[in-house]
Length: 114
Length: 112
Image (cartoon, rainbow over all chains, first blue to last red):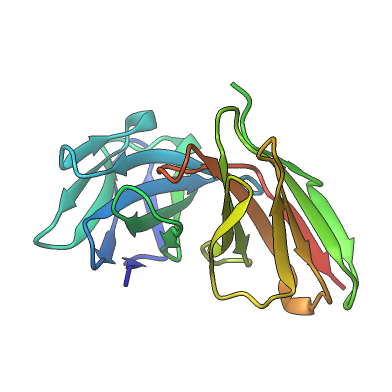
């Protein structure tokens, strides 16, 4: 069975400082992992995806994530936070490269302080 | 490239009523999934349609039903609405059954 744990429900950083959003997963299969961002009253936008290729994945808007199988982690990072990064972030796991279910974490709310 | 569009954006209903939500998938996508996102929670999978057939269902009662049409657009129908059905309903489309899924902006359903 798949599940996702986002270790922080809320993260607050100052503009220009690094961002770290933590995600641990469990999966019975080779997982596909994703990070999505959701701005208020909006749908979800894909930031990046891991599907068994390179373990360091680069996404949009300067975000990247590293798949660490030994730690069952897929943490999201960004070197320098921007005000526009303030949003809700979801870590998502699915079975392999196909399948009919996405398993969402409970989300991490990122606040960026000017 | 046209993205995923959902209608209506907002809807207010009362308990016991029925509602239909609509979704147009992204161009070239033939798989549609529906999710319920309660306030402050992550989305929960309701069901998925692939080439007009249901291709999996989450832990939702039968009063949640759906359709997919030949043009791959989709409907979510909910009967006998309950207060707990108040949520943002998200539609996502993808090519075949491959990830990732692309999401619409959702329909905000409020039950009074």
